[in-house]
Length: 297
Image (cartoon, rainbow, N blue to C red; front, side, top):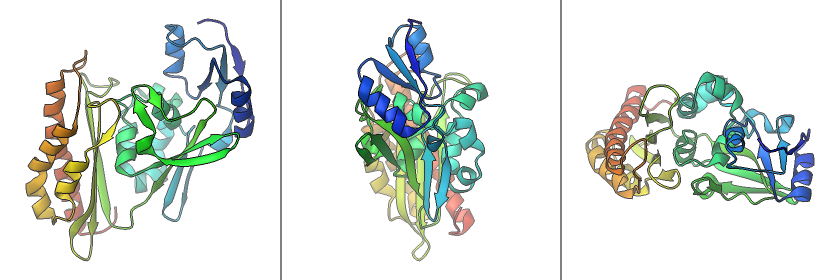
């Protein structure tokens, strides 16, 4: 690794000041599971590294009423085991439990995983399906934006050079809901996703129809994405109607993808997996809502 200056601020304000003062040739270090490797391979050659690990105000999971806030420095292993996540956002806990090995999850952070902006990241699809928002901070204040606008391309986000991702905000649905995340890899264990599918649905207890359906995909486009046309096919249907319409929704999801051929899979294989996984995830979620009898889970 090329020599660099290391800064270790103890507050967000201090980190933002350093980022503003130094700007160019400066990178942020959270868990470092991707950054350190990139520096070793000289893909990234920073003059300065700002380590965020001491900033406790970025390390939290909080629930207030129907709002859950997750700090950017919350580790993936903590999210896997956190009571709030397990009770309220099990789909997210399921997804982050599939990222890397337990050694990686003990170090890697949610903020770092999102800022890495891999098209195949496992944390983004469930958060997209839940209509999550991100809070971006700089020395002038904070800005809140939909997570869907955060990813611009492979390795690219909407963060400006002076901004730090502070937290992720998720609203707990008012209707009974269920969700699941399915991931295809080349091999068991710590491999990146060939395809990731998050499926979230809410049911209106008064009509017993699907009040909302959200399908988010990873590994099949330059950024994690929502399959909105597929969602429209299922929204408003009864559970029985939705189960029958899953094949059409799966085909619509495939049509929305733009996968590539790479070392992990061909584009055609990815499309085939999307079709299968949307049907499987949808059936699992819808049947879960039926089994729960419209009760919240």
